[in-house]
Every structure is written in structure tokens, then in C-alpha cells.
Length: 186
Image 1 (spheres, rainbow, N blue to C red):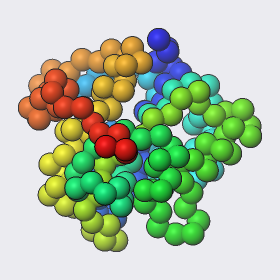
Image 2: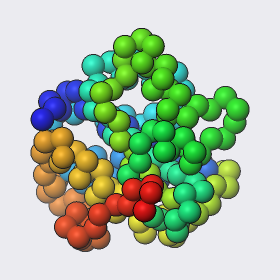
Image 3: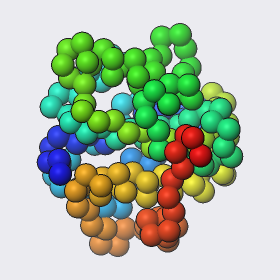
Image 4: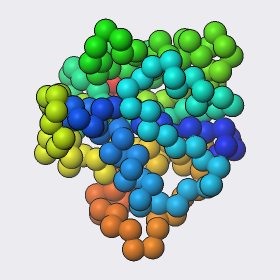
């Protein structure tokens, strides 16, 4: 079991590009709905780049919430992926964007790479720039992505409790009990 202070829950994505904002949206929901240990680190990185290397200091377990494209699955499908699997499905907007696997490679050069990284990804439906609303398929699947992130935290021994009065959708609890996210091979 890893101490919460060595776990990083990181959201990646641009909320001004339609479904690409699903990672930050789900992180925001989780922080509004649940109490986590105070030493659990949660960050919204926006677009990936070398700047995240500072956030990886002393991180043993990294859970990344991110949008995925061209997975071969229907929009709104939640997938559990490795960084290498995500590389082929990453949403990159410019030639300056970096794939997670590349950022982790840079971290390895400075001995800051986490021991284990898992990506909780969601197949997007649309990636139109300057569209702040997510597509209905992705929006509807957000509780499932949140449940998949909670499941990853639970596997690491992180305890969490619902905040009193938090408007947690029933779909999240249903997903925690009955749904198993797919792997990229599924």
C-alpha cells in the first residue's frame, strides 16, 4: 500500500476543446464530491509538457485522467491504459504538445519517474476548438470515469468518503459497484 503523499491524481486536457476537457472536469467533480486524505496530491495539468516534472517529485503512483481518440471504442467508453497505450490515442493540439509517455521518459532521465502509472482515459466524440461544452456521450459517461479513478485510488489503499450534501450522481455509485472499465485491448 502506497502512502497518499506518494500518489498523484493528475488531470490532463484543455477544457476549451470540447471533449478534451473531460480529465479536468472529472478531477473537479471528484474534489467537489469526496473527502480525500489531505496529503493526496491532485493537480490539473492542462496540456502536457515538461513543466509537470516538478509535480512528479516523490510520486510513486501516478493516475492520469485524460481524453483519448481513435481507440476503436464508442464515444464515452472508459479505458484503463498504460502510458505507451495512450501514446497512440493521445489528444495533441500542436507540434509542441507532448505525449505522456514522452514526459515520463524525461522524468526517468532525472530519476523522477513514478514507479507505476495508469491512465484512466475516455474515448471522445468531438474535439472542436473553442467549444466549452462536452458532447452528450462524454458528459453522460463522466461519472463512470470518476468511478474508474476512485477504483484506482482504492486499489492503492486511498480511503475517501462522500462530502455531506454533495450532489453525487447515482451513476457513479452504480459504476463503482458494477462496471469494470475496459482495457485498450478489449
